Length: 299
Picture 1: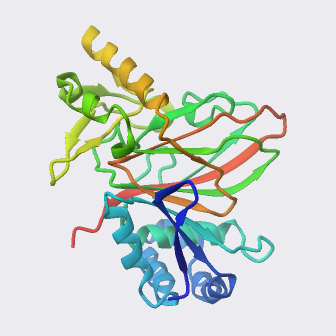
Picture 2 (picture 1 turned 180 degrees about the vertical axis):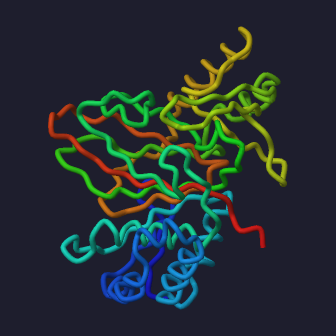
């Protein structure tokens, strides 16, 4: 096995997998077989690409990712490829992220991009209807998939490139490290159905209902929450959401770290929340991200 696995400097829960450039070189030929267009139009080609990725690492990468993501004690892995950007372009990063996703499960259809993945920029000026692209606003802790009917077991975020960036560090929080978990998850209001909508840019024409907190098959709390999309139906729900938001953001156990360009965060979406610190203002600020979210293979 030629990749290395260690614990992150900021949290023993977060695992770090590093790919050596010599191994990435072995992917250049099999990756060239698949154009971005073919990956978008032919879903079966994504499985072929993922298999090529796994074979480079003696078919051990898939098993390692699945173990990390499903283990409540870990659940997040940062993947750091040793990449020379002159040789490995953005298309390579799309293919690498696609391969990682299809080693563990099936991506959901991303309505925002109308594809199995989404690519988007955070820039100095923004007129979007979501905090996602607001460079100078804190992106509060949340999970993904709160406003869609599909399950969202896991989430991939890959940093494609950035320019003139200071700040904007990744922020994540494991539910079991959250000081207010017992209080907030046991509150009856948190177990009520909330209505969840979404802004126009998400291209989702319906609303869903579900609680903030439910339990997994071992009876442990899991969360589905984002601050922008719930539509509280009464005072109790509104005040509960405000308290939830305050308790999450004041947590002293958040894990904060910069994600290097070409690296990927791969997280379990049920017991890890994620966010981002504000950027420092710069007229030339630009960051491009790639997102894939989906479900684990059922077999």
